[in-house]
Image 1 (cartoon, rainbow, N blue to C red):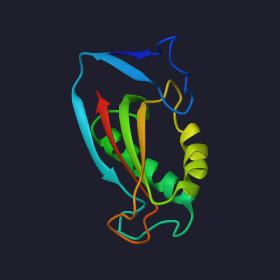
Image 2 (spheres, helix red, strand yellow; image 1 turned 60 degrees about the vertical axis):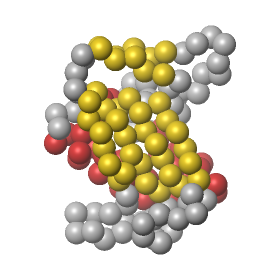
Image 3 (cartoon, rainbow, N blue to C red; image 1 turned 60 degrees about the horizontal axis):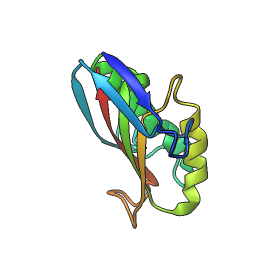
Image 4 (cartoon, one colour; image 1 turned 90 degrees about the vertical axis):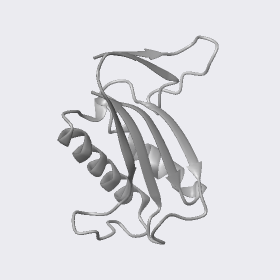
Length: 129
């Protein structure tokens, strides 16, 4: 699978937070359901701690990617939901440490709540394998 980051000179370069666009050729698409800060037993990890929850969410995303034969570098798009604007910086701090190459495209949405009142964050993704 070939993957190329697109960064038009007329747009701000948001890297390393996210990429403006990613062009792929070949490979299979993997659609990843919204992942939350739940462990294997369904327990919420990091109640009240956006960094701990973000790390757990990325661990869950990595587990899905690896089960499908990919890695975080396979991600081309993420949609992130947080429950308060104050969580943006903690989320960004953790996210910046996750990607070895150019990060995927990203949309961040602030929502009133998620499926469990203890969830502060949920991330869905699309990967090309």
